[in-house]
Length: 517
Image (cartoon, rainbow, N blue to C red; front, top):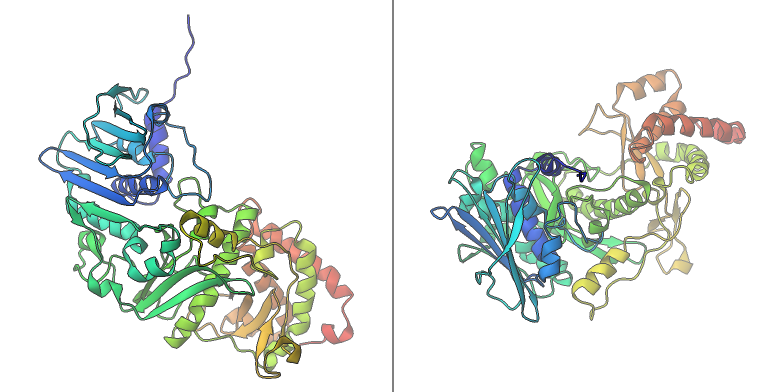
């Protein structure tokens, strides 16, 4: 008698579905596009036939030969390499098995190779498939067609308007002229065109207009890493808005700053940025950073949280903060931290914290990039294009040194700047006492390389009355930095070690440092 290992394929697919935040129909559309883009497609054509009860997506990518198409039906199969794409191993077609009666995939892999298969989920444990004759669905020399056949007309995937809105919402940067010119032309050299039932998808003219564009640069030499825009007074739109009772109108973006990589929107809001504007709900924008593809989770819908990838993410996030802060200040949405005499008074404590973090850097390496980097990497040359330029942009995000916590200092004549008129920051952590009027209940927060202690919080006011300011600042700095440690390391563990290390440093501090407050 032959033994057999059996897997509940339906549960496996449902687990894959649950790893995303979006609805299943959106996931399917998103993944079909992502895998097409990963295959170097420059054109995608969606055909929605409600009467025929099918949805078809055809691309002109590199396609698959018969052996690759056979492996494509392995639920757990993936030849994806991190940082080289945004799709997830043909998961669009695989997850379609949860909704469609059958999935037909046809592909041309070049040199006359062509093959087609039919696939279905027969029961929770079986997903049989077979090779079938090709139908000519792929009209280009190479490419892939995926057709989902449904048993009824109830699915959102049989609504052309749903498909169009989902494509624009999840791949908004692909259709935005500014983002295309400033950054995505290095990724998609020939551009990308998407059609739904023969109509080319475009953004309305009013969505091409915006108030403030910005560029994201890395390191002292300002190597380009991304670009974005912010604009004011925009509401959630598209089919999401209509379903929630809002009137359709201006934009397909939700309020907040969305972040995308390779044209795919990964997150929306302000939490990931670490900055909360005064009128957060009235601002909308997108920042495209190709290098973030290196720190995406397996399903490409979030960022990895292990120490090496956190370092890359925080370095890029700091660059985004540096890029948008001038915009937010010009809009009156963010006030700079106060750096008067109070800031000078806490510099001795900053030096103690510097010594503490140097001692903890080996145990908590994810904080290294958060605290600064001394040099950047190469930027793309004008001759660079396509994937080569995209990877150069990604390389610019990788730090090569581990610097100490830093202080502000005046730049002298040797630097070539005007003496006494400009300041520059050494890499590292700075402290500031600040009225966080937009978040009065917050103990503090970190923006760029500055931890701001909220002087509006009642705990700070009590610390002043009891002359415990120094300890309050230390606890707040520890709590703020604890948010950035890798998830497998408990924040309280970091806080405890931070305070323990400080107690050892403080014991050897000079009388002047001990009496700073």
